[in-house]
Length: 146
Image (cartoon, rainbow, N blue to C red; front, side, top):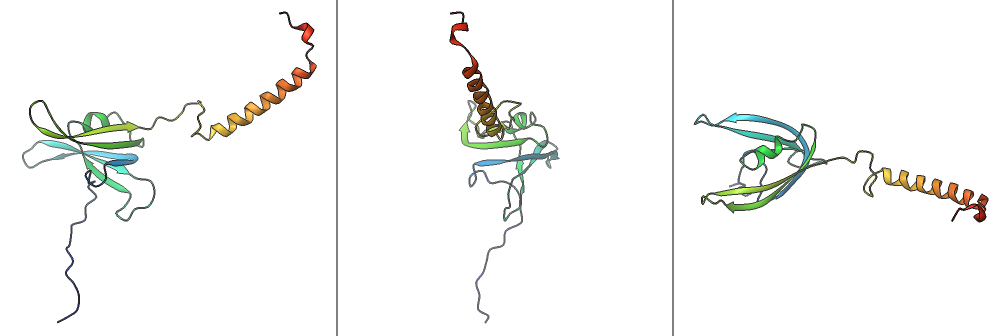
């Protein structure tokens, strides 16, 4: 008999496992309505993660009562973060998965410390300080009206 061990075979799936990975961040890459055997439909969303992953960059998540209305407010190409908050019991006694969805909103001309513009702002601040110090040297305090 040959030497070796039995290894379990799993089907390939890009379906995201919320229990193992409760946070998913990436570019909103697509959505599609799928039909179930009973004729009802559900939404499937594609999220493209940044970086390189063994299982690929694009993952699939299924929609639902919580995710659908939130993700439908996101445009394709928008950076999104989906956080699985766990299972919750509804007022009717049904258990459902609860999520928080955030979308990236770039600073529009505003400068922040996480922004490349921060360095430019610091440079401008130094330029202004230099101008003010030059003016300060040429101002006669007796000319100030108060």
